[in-house]
Figure 1 (cartoon, helix red, strand yellow):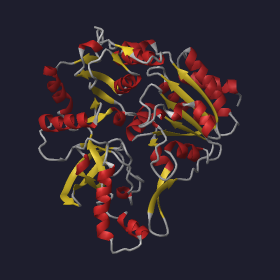
Figure 2 (tube, rainbow, N blue to C red; figure 1 turned 30 degrees about the horizontal axis):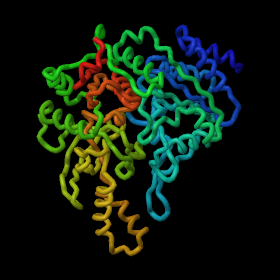
Figure 3 (cartoon, rainbow, N blue to C red; figure 1 turned 45 degrees about the vertical axis):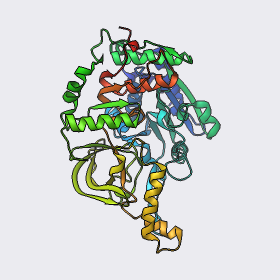
Figure 4 (cartoon, rainbow, N blue to C red; figure 1 turned 180 degrees about the vertical axis):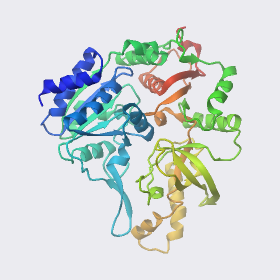
Length: 472
C-alpha cells in the first residue's frame, strides 16, 4: 500500500475535517505504519482536548483493514479502562501485558519479562507520561522493559501517547517516554514525534477544558513563576468553587451511594487524603470499623503472590482499584495488623474475585506505602521464624512463601494524591488546595493543578482555595 492511499483511509476513518495539526499527525501515522526502518516508534503528544482520542479511535478502526494487529496498553488499570471505553476494545495495563510470574526449578517465584509472540503488530500505549525509569522488577526499568518487549516481536512498532503538562513520574522532572531525543539516544529505535496544541473550539465550551487549556498555555511560556489568578468559573456549569458550608452536603450527595465509583478527592499529600478518607467513611458512609464490606481500596505496591493460580490475573499491580467483598478474619502478627478479605477489581470487572491478606497499617499511613524502616521491621520479624534455615538464600526463598510477608499494601480510594489518580478519570473530582497563600505559583504547582483538573469528565469542585485563584 502506498503512503498516500493509507493517509486517505485514515482521513476517511477520522470522520470529520482534521485540524492542521491532526492532518500532520495523520500523514506521520501513514508513514510510521508503513516504515521499514529499525524499531519504528512514534510519540504523539498533545494538550487535553486536541483530539488524541479521536486519532487513536481512527487507528483502531483502520488497522484491521490493512492487515495489522494492535494491542492497547496503559500504565494503570484505571487508565486501561479509560482507553478500553473510548475505543470499545480490550486494553491492558503495561505490567500485565509485558510481565509474567515465573516458577523456577528451585521452587522460587519471580516476575520476569514475558516473550512477545506478536507479529506485524502496533502497540498503542496511552498516558505514556507516567512511564519512567522506576525499577519494578529486576534491574531494568519499566521503560526499558516496554521497549525491549515490543521490539523483540517480529515487525512490531510502538505508539506512545501522552501530555507533557501532566505530572512526570515520581522522582523525575520530565517524562522520558515522551522525550523523542532521549529515547533515540538510549534505545536502538527510529523515532519521530509531534505535539498537538490546537484545542477544538467545542471543547472550550467546557469549563474543565477551558481552564486546563489556560494552565497549559502558562506552562508553555516556561516562566519561573506564574502570577495569580488562574481560574475562570463564570459562565461554566461544570466547574465551581465551593464554600465550606456546602462541602459536606456535596460529599454526601456524591459518596453516599457506596456503589459509586465515579468520584474522588485529589489531594497534595497522603496525610490530607487520609483525613478525607476517614471523614467520608465515618460521616458520609457511617462506617465505624477499620475496614468494611464495600470499602474502596487502591493497591499501592505490586504483588504477584495472591494472583498465583488465577487463570486471568498474573499479578496485582500498583494502582489497581479494588472493592472489599467479604471480610473473613482480623489478626495481629509481627507487630503489624492484617485482615483476610475477598476483593473484586473495579477496573477489571470480568475477572474473578481474589482472596488475599491485606496489611492494615498502610491504610492510614502518611507515606505512599510501607516506609523502608517499616519494611525492614516486618522482614526482620518474619525472618526470625525461619532462622532454623542456616543458608540465607534458602531462608529467603521460604520467606517469600509467607502470606504475611506478601500481604497486599492498600489505601482507601475515596481521596487520593494526584500521582495516584494519574491516568484515570472520574465523573466528579474535588480538588483540595494545600497551596500556601502566595501571589505566584511554580511550574510544579501548575502541573499538579493541570493533572488534577484533567481527571474530571463531568464536574470539578475547588475545595479550600483562596479567592485570589479566581478571575471572576
